[in-house]
Every structure is written in C-alpha cells, then in structure tokens.
Image (cartoon, rainbow, N blue to C red; front, side, top):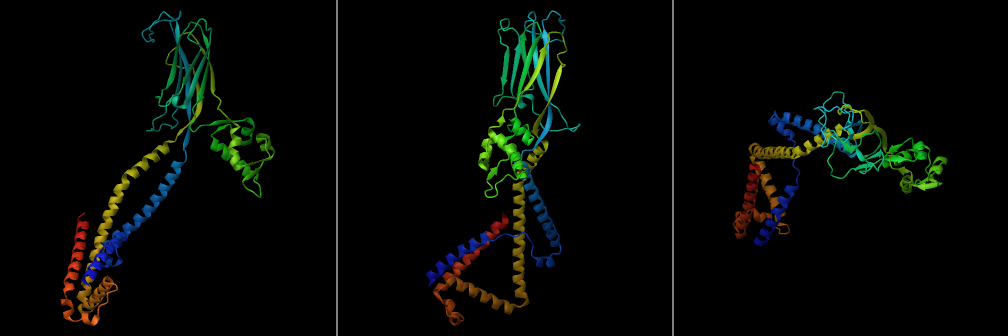
Length: 415
C-alpha cells in the first residue's frame, strides 16, 4: 500500500505543476482588494486605459501594415539640362576660369546631359535622400550627325544601367571637332514598377496611355463590370461587346485568358527624344542652354516615416513585453497574499468551522491521491491509524512536495 501511495503521490505532483503552467496569469486586481487597499483603484483605472490604448495601437498597426503592403508613390518633376562647352576653337579667349584640357591645341567640345529632381515641398526641409538622375534612366543613346571618315571614334554613344552601379547626376561626352554638330539624344526611362505603353485601340478604350500591367487588368475589369459583360450563367466567361471584339478579335474570353489577351497590346514605353545642336561658340559652362521637365514617380516620404515608426515599435516590443511580465508577477504576488490573508482570516473568525472544513478538504485531496484505494473513515478517526508504518513515508512525500513548491515560489519571486 505504501508503494502505491508513493507512486500516486509522485504522479499527482507533476500534473499539478503542469496545470499551473497552463493557467493564464491575469493582470487585473481582484475587486475585494480595493476595499483593503483604496489606492488599487488607480491601478484599475490605469489598466482600463491601457486596454483602450492597446486596442487603438493594434488598429493603427493594422492600418500601417495595410498601407505598407500597397505602393505609395508621389509624382515629382525631373528636370533634364542639356548644354555643351567648346575648347581650342579659333574664337576661344583663354582665361584662368576655363576648364583646361590636356591638349588645348586640338579643338574639342563636351556635351553635358544632367538631371535634377525638383523639390516641390514649398520650403519644407526633408530628411529623405533624393534619387539621382541615373536612377530614373535605363539607357541613354546619343547619335551625332557628322562625317565618320573625319571622326573615326564613332557617331553613336550608348550608356546602359548595370545592377549595383552607383547613381550619378549626369553624363559628359567629350569629342574632337571645330564645327557645329546636330545630336539626337534618346533617353529610355526606368519605371519601377515596370510600365507599358498600351496599343492605340486599348488606350482609347480605357483612357490609359502608360501604366503597369496590374493597373491595366484592373481598368479592363472595371470596364467589364460597368458594361455588364459577364455571362449570366457562368460568371467566369466574358461576352465581349463590339469594342472588345475589335481589340481582342474574339467573341468570348475567360478571366484566366485576360492577361494573355492584354499582353498582345502592351508595348515598350516610348523613349524621350531630344534634338540638340552642339555649337562651338563660347558660353558659360555653368549655364545650361535647354531644360526639359519630365514627370516621374518616387516613393512617398510618408512611407519612409511609416517604416521608421514600424522599426521603432519592433525595437521596443521586447521592452514592453518585459514590463508586462513584471506587472503580471506583481499582480500574481498580490493575489497570493490575498489568498493567504483570506485563509488566515477564516481561521481567526471561526476556528472550529475552519478546522473542520480544512480537514474535510484535505481528506478529499487524500482520496484523490489514493484513487482506487479505499480507507475506512471510521478507522482513520482513531490515533492508531496514524501510527502505521506507511504513514511516515506518506508524510515525508507530502512535506517534500510542499517544500519543493515553496522553494519554486521563492525563486520565482526573486527573479
């Protein structure tokens, strides 16, 4: 019997500990403590305010996540400056402020293609690092109209963007020559995300000249819904009207086929073509002769500020969790003190009833530990029952479990 009691006692202890770990730690103070400690009402009010604040922060965090998932772009103006300087010409007047060339006796010229993103913030200072000209350009081609037999270095100059290449504010092309030269400058823009030029028929239908593929698909879907072109029996089928029949050359199409049909009408964007005449007469090298404004899309500064806010929240999340854990431990200690006080006050108010209830409670726990082993209650009322040899072993295991529990509580409080 004593071996069975030992086994059941050892089995009961881990289960009790396991259930303790699963119990949720509350951060609320029991209402009865307010009658004992009136100041605890301030904590209750603060806790209610914290709940409202947490709910608000959670809603804002979801809004931020939704905003971050969508590309936030703002339109700005990219101003392109075209100019040239000439050196070693017959009409040059050399002075100390001019750019010195390695060989001043050879007539030469330098064509400059520069770009700058205009600040439309109306005097407001921004911490955002502005992109440079080359970040908006994918390719630059300069075609020179001159006799190639006289100038064997070639009449076509091409620059292509390479991955990992540092950004620059402009390009300079240096060539020899003493006569005016007509130049055609071709600039291919680098759109992010990539944009396409729509065919003339589809562009007129959707009123879109240049856009991304997802936006084109969405615009076509809005057109289909507005004109109620979905089949009444099968919503996946689209019954094309006369305009769509003319563009896609089919009477019907399904939703999975839409991107395939749209691809046939997506073309590369038209490059920017600038005709410029390189003149050999003297001019100030710091003044551009022509300027061209191009509308470009850049990441909104609000998105960068949102990213910084998200990073700060993530950095402080661990600190908030540590503070919440400390508060939970303090509340748990207060609840434990409240239970001990109630236990002692029950004994002070009515010792006889308290002892009877406590003995009855211990008897129920004892029966749960024994399980199938039944003890004669009448026999347990006599002192001889507690003099049996297995009683000492049972008391030893009980006190050992109780001491171990008390030790764990002290270690937990010290942490």
